[in-house]
Length: 491
Image (tube, rainbow, N blue to C red; front, side):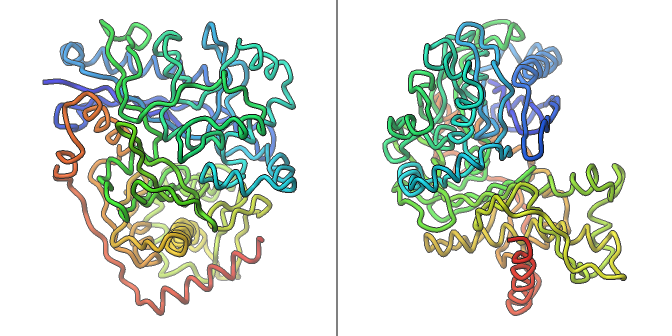
C-alpha cells in the first residue's frame, strides 16, 4: 500500500495531508501563519514562517505515522497563487516579506501601465487583466521601491517565485527551481498559448527572465525531498498545482463546460474551456487549468476577493460576531436581509467589475435592522458575487454549467449553500471532502507517477450531496436587480 503526502499551502495556513492508495485522507496536520497589514490595502506574509510551519507540520504528521511513511510513494504540493516571494539564490532565505495576492499596493502601477496602453497586449498574451491581484505589478512596484533587491535580481543572486517555486527550492535544498504552468499562468509574465515566459512582458515589469523558475507540467516530477529531515529517506516530489486548479481537478471537471467554485478567503470560480485558448474580451480571465504531456487545458475564471473573509471582517474588524456565534443559525433567524446589502469591496471589486477604487458599504439599513439581517446580507453577498461571475463567463464564452461543484470550508454552512443555488439558479454538488485542493494534487501525483490515468480518475465515484434552487426565476431576477442597484452605490 502506497501513501502520498500532500502539502497544501494556503493564504491562511499550511496543511499537510496523508492520502492512502485510494486517495482518501488518512490524517492531516495544520498550522496557521500570521497575516501582516503594514499599511491600508497592503497584505504580507513571512515566507520564512511559512517554510518553518511546513517543516513543523510534516514532522508532526510523519511522527504519528512512522510505519506508513516507509511506504510513502510521493510528496506533492498545492499553494496559494499570485503571492510572490524574492529569496536568496544560495540559502533560499526570503529577502523581503511575501506580497500576497490580496495586496493592492501596486494599484498605481496598474493605472500607469493602463494609461500607457499596455492593458490589451497583457490580456491577449496572458489571458489576465492588468490588475494588482496578479504578480507582475507587485514585482514592478518592488523593483522601484527596493532598488537593492532589484540589483540582486539583475546580478543573479536573488530569485523570484510564487509560493510553489519558493517551497520547492527549500524542499530540495536549492536543487530544483521550478514552477508549474498553473502558477506561472497567474503572474502576467507567461505567454499562455506558448506556456513560456514572455520577454516583452518581463521587460515591461522589470523582471529578469534568469530570475524566474523553469515552467513544468502540472503532473511532472520536481526533484526529491526529505522535508528538511522529517522523512527517513528521499521521496520524489510529483505533482504541483495552484490551489484553485487543483480543486477543479479534484472535482473531476475534466470536460469542457464543467465548473466548480472554491469558497475560502475569497472564491475562485473556474469553468473548463478545453484545449483551445481564446483571449477574453470582457471581465473574465483565463488560466491554465493544468498541463499534461505538453498538452494544455484552459479554464475561464471569475475571481472574488472576499468570501469567508467577509464574515471574518464582521467578527474581527466590526465586532459584530463572536467566536462562538453560529453564523448559519443567525442568518436563518430572519426570512431575508430586510433590504440590507453588504458590498464587500474592502480591496476593490474583482470580476466582473474590476474596480480597485470601489469601497465596501452596508446599504439599506433601517431602524428595524438587526445583526441577523447584516449577517444574512453578508452571506448573500458571497452568492451574488458568484452569480455575477457565472453570468460574466456565460456572456464571454457561451458556457452555462448544468451543475456547479462546490468545495471549501464555507460549504458546511447550509444556508449559504441554499442561497448560492437560489441566486445562481444552478444546482450545486458538494463533495464529501473539504480538502479538494490537496485531493486534486494528490490525484495529479498518481497520474504523474503512472499509478492512475485521467480516465480511471474520471470513472472513480465521489460522494456528493446535491442542492436544488428553490426560488422562481422572477424572484431571482428581482433580487439580482436589487443587488446591482446596491453595487452602484460604491462604484
